[in-house]
Image 1: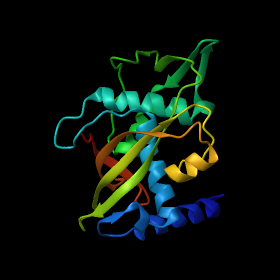
Image 2 (image 1 turned 90 degrees about the vertical axis):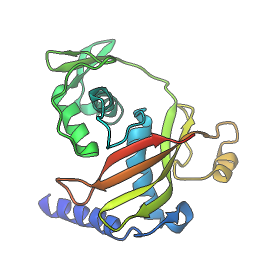
Image 3 (image 1 turned 180 degrees about the horizontal axis):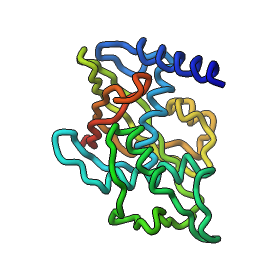
Image 4 (image 1 turned 180 degrees about the vertical axis):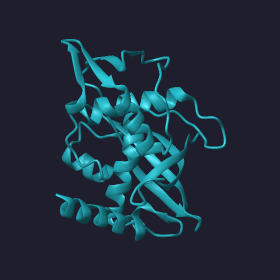
Amino acid sequence: MKKLLSIVFASILGILLTLPAFAVGRADLSAADRDYLDTFFSNFAEAGVESFVVNNEIPRDIFVDFGVRHNLINRQYDLVKVNEGYWGVKKEAVEAAVYKYFGHRIKAASSRQYKLTNNLYIVPKSSGEALTFAQIAEWDADGNGVWHGVANVYVASSGFTGNVHGNAAEWKKAEPHDVPRLKGRYSFTVTRSPSDPGRYVLCDWLELP
């Protein structure tokens, strides 16, 4: 297992270290780089992260809401079944998600949307929600371990089965009645994770007009 994890880590790190160190568009990136960055930014898009900039104090609610939603979407195996209508999201899972994707250590507390009770965020179960995902559009390195760019955020029906890394022409051909629509565009800044050089963490996320 340790050998397998080492191979996986080396592969991811290899992808990151070969990403272009200058301004490029989506078409200039390799398919592997596009897929990796699409997946990374989709974590924030699907969780509905609001605009923030690193030079301002980031509201705790942004972190807490992200951590709760990220676990609901991607870690259902780790949710606590409270009853037939509600899930419980563990406090420590929220804190771990925030550190992994933002590089910030927080002491999780109640947000305006999610109340913390006995170390659990109690959240209604839901289904049939729209599919939201992101695609890298522009990528630019400043040479100092900081990257900037633009990500496009799309929304499709909950039943969409097309390629989230595809384009409008592919979507229209595959599912002409369920083509994702552009929901918004976000400028971003990322740096290396403070604990894992094979990952990025998000520093800025600002919706463009």
